[in-house]
Each structure stands twice: as C-alpha cells, then as structure tokens.
Length: 459
Image (cartoon, rainbow, N blue to C red; front, side, top):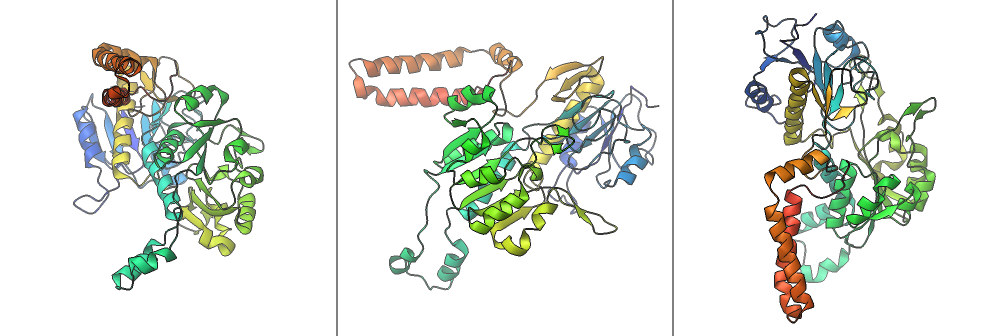
C-alpha cells in the first residue's frame, strides 16, 4: 500500500527533448517546477530510491521504460499512485490507482485498467490529458509539410545554380514558374484544437478553408469565416490539400469507427494532384485507396505522421505507420513519412505539457480536482473543467467568469471607440473616419484575442 500523504508518481517519457549540458535530453525545467510546487524529483525508480520524505509528492523519472514486461515489473503491483506518460503504451496490468495524465491530446496509449483503458471509462482513477499543448506545434508541421510541396519552387536546384554563379535573374527566372497558395482550397476534417489551428494557418496564406465537423460546430466554424462542409466528401470536393484531424472514435468488432475515413470517395473528390496530410492518426486513411490515388496522380503527394514501433529483440515493426511502408516501392517519391514526430519533437511544447501534467496530478492528489477529464469521474473527485493554452479550444463559463473578475472596462472602451468610429463613417465625416475606424477595429480585435474570446463557446 502507498502512503496517501506521500504519493509516488511515475514518469515514463522524456520531459525535455533538447540536450542539456551533459548532452542528454534536458528535464531541468520540469524538475524545477516540481520542486517549486513542493515536490521531490527523483531520477530513477522508487524501488531503488531512499525512503521518501514524508508529506511530499515524489516524482520518479524513468523515461527509458518501454516494453510491457518492463512496465509491469515496475508498476504492476500498485507501487505508484499516479503516472505521467507521452507516447509510451501503458498496459492494462500497470496500476496507478489515483490517476494518470497523458502529455498531449489523445489517450489511446493510456491502457491501464486503473481508469478502464484509453477511453477512461471505468476503473477507480481519473484519466486526464493536456489538450492543446502540442496543437500549434502540430499545425505548424502540417503547414511545413504542405510548403515543401507547394508552391513547387525547386529551392535546392536554384540555390546550387546561384551558389555556382550560374544564374541570371533576367534570363533564367522564367524557367522556374510556380504558383502561390493564395486562392487554393484547403480542406480540414475536424474542428478540434489542431484542426482549428491548421485552418487558421491556411487562411493566413490566403487559402479558402473548408471544414467538416459535427453539425453543432457549424455556426462557430462559419462565425470564424471558414466554410462548413456536412460530410468529408463535401469538404474534399475540389480541394487542393486535405488535412485530417479527428479521433479514431469508439472501437467495435470491425475496428475503430473512423478508421479509413479518408477513403476512395474522399480522395476522388479532391482536385487532381491534391496533397494529403495526415499528421493525426495513421488509421484514418484507407491505405489501399491512397495507393490507387497516388498511382493515378489524383493525389500528388502524401505526408503521413504516425507511430512506428520496432521490437528491440526481433526487429519486427508494428504501429499505424506500418501499412504505409508498403507504398514505398511504387510511390517513394510521392511520400513523406514521419514516426509521429510532429507533436513530440518540439522541446518547449514537451516541457509545457509536462509542467501542466504535474499540475494536474497534484490537483487530483492534493485537492481532489480533475482537469481535462477523459471518460468517467471517479467517486470522491470533482471535475474542474478544461485547462488549455490561451486561444485554443472552446471558451468555458469559468474562463468568462475569470475575465469578468479581471474587469471589462478596457473592452467596453474599445467597443465604444469602434461604435463612435462607425457613426462617424455613417455621418458627415464619411470616408474621412477611415483611420479611426480601422484603428478601433484592430485594437478591439487584438484585445479580444488576448482575452481568449475567439473560437467557440461550450457551456
């Protein structure tokens, strides 16, 4: 049995990705955060560590644990009260009877029976995640993948010519025509944290963005200036790029509900030569249908970011990336494959997510309050609602109450300035009020964005 006043928390993934002074991934920022919160940070297992200091939460850093056997040996007997993980899969037999947090949005790898598995339904402990922490990093990588292909300016070739002094702008530039992203259609399937960030970035490039999501999101999608699509096929119709950002959905006898969501019908609806981007779940794309679309040129390039695992003993490969490897012999030049790196290789993102995970674990252990709950709320605990970076996800009633507590006078003044400028435009000043109007509009827009008043409201 564990001491409830001196909880033990296991950390099974790296808390930093950039190298520190000793050349190893640097976890010092999270170590300092734990200590600032009154906790103790221990390198290594609780099984080899000295007796813990009474009354302090202890975080045991074991980022090299990976196999089921290793995790069951370390945590199969309930030694640890809670766990923080990122990519490591936690088997059902690993026990963490007071809670678990996954750094990131999904929880499919959180398989412990302590909370009933990856959906958090059942069990005795709460399952949590840190949604939005890696949304911007992932969205930026999606756009980077698109920009590698379009506009299709051969940067490396032109660099070599320039570096060799073998280029004349007046004569040679005409040999390298290209086309901008502006005016093209970008389809997004999903209106969660990542999907919305991708849509915003695509719009910043002047693209026409069309989003498919549940009907309840339609008003919010359109209020942000995006087009709504009722089905994935409607979203894809005539699109020059498609990016998919939805969960796998519930798992039934035939597999996950959304597996193969991007199939032959969706791919056929795209503009010829479109680019497919799947930096979310590998299973969302029907790989045989993608192979056919690549063969005909209907899809000119596919950028995929999905988990790939290699057994350390046998070398056998597994994971949702595996089916895509079968495309390489025929379509290697049309593929960009990453091992689910887009969201998990940014050092500041991992550190921020880890700090938030520490806070969420302590909130449960010390206050009985669960933030970012996934699934069922165990007896004796209170749901504290969402916890996300500013500007991501939906705006909650609690966030509005916090904004009201801070005072609304600044927003009122800016709103009044805009109303005055509009009256001036409608009156005798006419177009002479243009500068005042645009300054007022810009200032109000900036203030609303800083206050987090954008996106959708969910009460």
